[in-house]
Image (tube, rainbow, N blue to C red; front, side):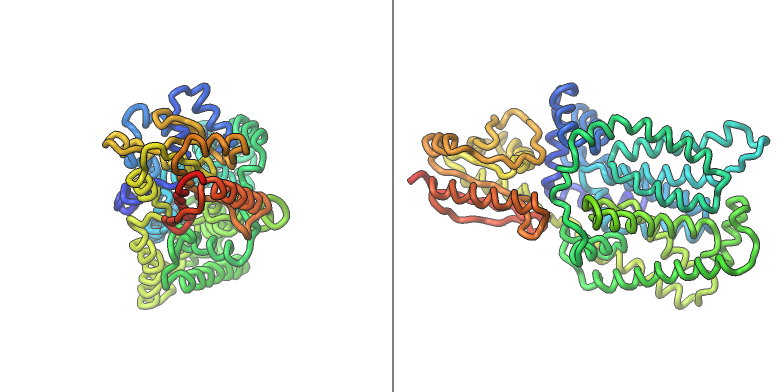
Amino acid sequence: MLALALSLIGITGRSLGFDEGATWAIATQHVPGHGLGAGIAHDGGNMLGFYALEHVLIRAFGDSLLVLRLPSVLAGALTAAFVAAIGLRLFARRTAVLGAVLSAATLSIVYWDQTARGYAPMLAFTCAGMLAFVVLADTPTRADTGPRGRWAPVLAYVVAMVLAVYCSFVAVLVIPAQLVALIWRREALRRFLVGLAALVLCAIPLAVLGTARGAGQLFWVPRPDGQVDHQVLESLTGSGLQSSFHPTFLATPGIWITVAAVLAALGCSVLASRRPGPDAAAAPAVVGARAADLEPFAGWGATLVLSWALVPPGLVFVYSLVFQPLFQPRNLLTSVPAIAFVLALGICDRRLPRWAAGTALVVALGIRLVPLALSYDVSPEPWDAATHAVLAAARPGDCVVFYPEDAHNPFQYYERTARSAGALAPRSMLPVTGWGEVRSYVERYETLSHARQAALAARCTRLWLVSSHEGQSTGPERSRHNLRTFDHFRTQLEQLFGRGRVRTYGYASAIHVRLLPGPH
């Protein structure tokens, strides 16, 4: 209920974003075999299941912001529930409750709970898969258990993880952490590998689509550097979410406090594993929870959550340095609940004095709640304001071009409402499409040939140039190329129509609206 409430606050207050515009445009297609399928294929199959769900909801209930974001809101509530269930299986009740509360109040989770993208459903299904994994690892393999009892968790794991992967590819990042944790549960390895094989078979369609699309869709992801590292740590620790929101005074202290706590927990776990004691790993879950009451970092549960918290970020960081960069906050969202559990274990440690535990609790909640409270109703990409400004100033004979063409998606979402109220929309010349027809544009960095530019000057009295996500001067080569292409294209248009004023909306990925006065 807490997660649901935090996700519903201001659910329609934030403007539809650039990526949400792609979700709307893809899911709105009314021909599943052509428009919807083509949009999903062009996106490399990522979020296939989420787009299909959104398509069904839009057909049934319309495409309001509430409808578009409702699956993510409900997924956020389920995430907190699954996190609590994992905690109840591994730890004492107070640790489970606090871990779930810290997860529910984390800005990075709430942000995606309020966004029409597949990350919130992915996280919910991933946590469901982690719960099934915990049950699988705790289920005895003796004959008296029965085949149903031994294999039911495997089936649940496969179903949950398949749904997670079909919401976003990044769900697979928890699998290496699970394999590491199985070092202490070798008796469950065979059943886990059977489930993993079934998962691989079910993910073959995604692999085919992803291979056909290639890594080109990741052109914008830079290699790890100081800025990227800081953004990832903010997301994992819940102390902020740059560049979507401006950092608060707690951003950097929150990172260092949380990192220190995680490292301390890792050290305690290593020391506890070297001390002689009862074999908590071989005990049933409830016995393990009682043992963890006395030594919270000695049990298999602590080993699992530490692996869950550290292995995915570590692997992605190394992979990004050597191969394709992937080190981004959204790609590491699956480790955020594990960080919350690590903090909960430390705060709930009975050896900690009450005043210290109370102080730690206040600090942990404050690090999360302050940036979360300041994020509500903030629109880093205010496409509603940009669209309404263009429509309010448009005149007959005006034309508009978008760079990239993806910017057409969120603009058209708000254009429909304004046009129904009598507003005049400039003729769209890039892409060339009528406003009454919805098409999906994903990563379309196209420009106009000289012949089409000449035709543009002959047909249009004024020209609106709407751009966002043009590229980054310090980004990867493809991103720099897109920016150079835009600068050249803008110069060509200004030579035809003259230089006009530019207005900027938002700050995360700013929207630039230029009005070029007319052909010379």
